[in-house]
Length: 262
Image (cartoon, rainbow, N blue to C red; front, side, top):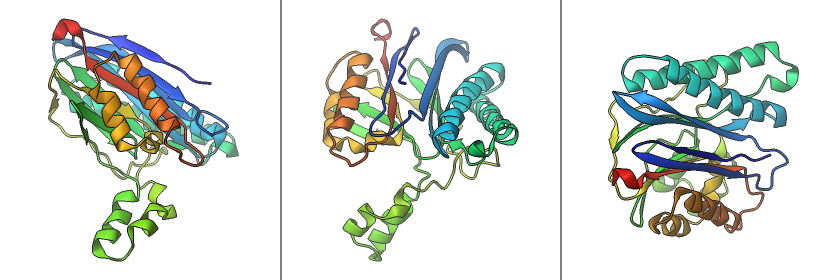
């Protein structure tokens, strides 16, 4: 089962979409809501990529995005503290489900990407390997840290311990160094200050299935002016066309400045 998302406020228009890929079940999830953000109307967006078996991964992702949005909305104070409150609510929900559930849920967990948007600014919190991308014209930049083993494997290439070919097929690449499992979270990327965003370009939250899409194809889709819904569909088509064996679930939310804010 797949889902979509459409949200807008005075500063942003956002569209979410997903594909199953070659998996038996959709274990990605996302959610969003309009919020009050430092005296302005803004948006809170959450995206999670589940792990731990079919039932566990799907449930963990659902609990995480719902808990993160609810926790953020209920919290007070500075934005980065509200993001941490969302993380805590999401992780607690997973802890309770693991404790109360069957053995099939004992290994459940997920990544979490939580983004708060106000006109011209964004705050984020990231755990795991889901991607937060900023696109301006044809320039594409990843904003958040990658908590998989991929950066460490790539460091071995720079040291000369592995070839690029060996690193590309190293089974450790996709192992996570940090995730929401109900236990203390090992690594959290959450800058206190917001990212200043130009009115041109867009912001993309995506599960790691998007890495199947060629970099130049992603840049082309996001560099071509279009509504967020069209750009989201273009990115999913790029993932399908990436010719990756066993395409993963791919979910994303594309956010662009609303015309009224231009």
